[in-house]
Image 1 (cartoon, rainbow, N blue to C red):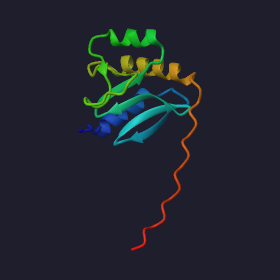
Image 2 (image 1 turned 180 degrees about the horizontal axis):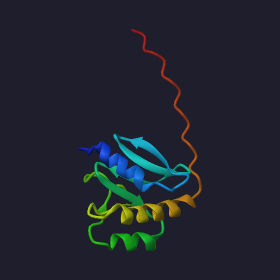
Image 3 (image 1 turned 135 degrees about the horizontal axis):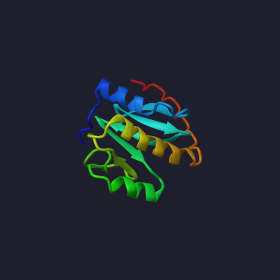
Image 4 (image 1 turned 120 degrees about the horizontal axis):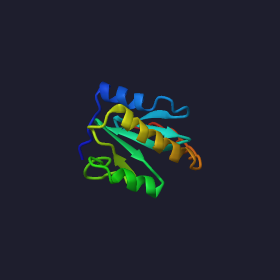
Amino acid sequence: MQIPRPTDADKDRFRALLEGLPEAEVKPMFGNLGAFVHGNMFAGLLGSDVGVRLPDPASQAELTALEGTGPFGPAERPMGGYTSLPAAWDDERAADWVRRAYDEVAVLPPKAPKPRKPARAPRAS
């Protein structure tokens, strides 16, 4: 499975779409980026594609009805519950949907951080 990589300009645009979202946290994910609030992912960057998670079924249906939206993630394994925003959208329109995703995901229960795995002991040769 080939995972596309974002350019620095793609990363800058993604971060700009998150401006004004006070508790948004950007984390690297498999060479791409994810945006989280309270430990829950609400938006992602895969190559140049921006995807959002809308837990409200009405919001999800509204977005997927718009021309140019589609599954988000690698073609072989799209991420369930996420929708790609059309590449042709300007930053203002994309930021509106990113904010909607943030608002919907921010009210979900915080996700508990996964416990760290203990460090492996070096193998004896």
